Length: 301
Image 1 (cartoon, rainbow, N blue to C red):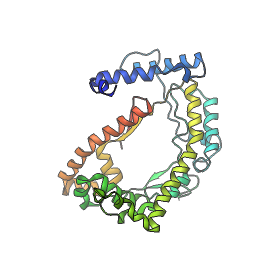
Image 2 (cartoon, rainbow, N blue to C red; image 1 turned 30 degrees about the horizontal axis):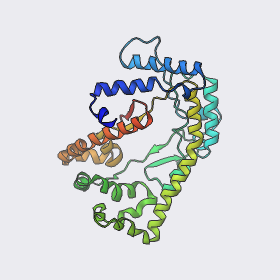
Image 3 (cartoon, helix red, strand yellow; image 1 turned 120 degrees about the horizontal axis):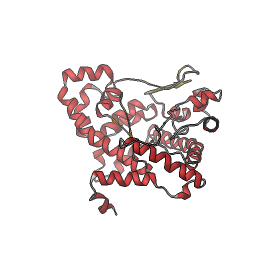
């Protein structure tokens, strides 16, 4: 089956993905009316995407955190009580005509999970921001230093593990003391050997605690998403990826850093962008395939 897929043209792959999105099993839905509503909404969206005239203009409503405020909650309330957050989103979807797509409460992240990892790149209500702040903030910084392009280009995975994660997640700071990942070739135990140290075990325990928190946190949101889908409302979010330059400018070097690099080492900037292009295509396509939704969201900053 995989070989057959690999022989298809991009146009044929696109057609199969769209066909799968349009025709899920009827057993996915609460009843025939919901199944028909789903098909009508997806058909409307696909016609607009293909520049055809649909029966009416499709409407997608990016509600963000508004359902929390509509229910009398703050974003902080939702970030620390997902069951209450899900009740707020359910009330919103019951009270309003939400249009042709729905996103649920999945964008409300767990404040506790971010605390576990000690995120250095995020501020959120009650953690660097006032309790009534309406949204999170990204903390810009030089998470990649100006002299690290060679490392980044030569072994991106090693750089991410030993440089990026320790700088952006305080709970994993100890990873900066690890030897290069290629040291494990022929001797895989060299990767786990640092676990003889308590601070290394603490870092991995933070990962375990984070995973448990996110797993528990996601259960109410996933249940609501299934309800909305079963009622006949498709979700647009499939994969997610980034514009390569934005990765460098927004999340790694920061505004000042990338502007200096564009003048001082433009060749390295372009080499990094060229390296990031296929990576981000792969990330977006894999996520879209896993979600069975033929869309990739790019945040263009």
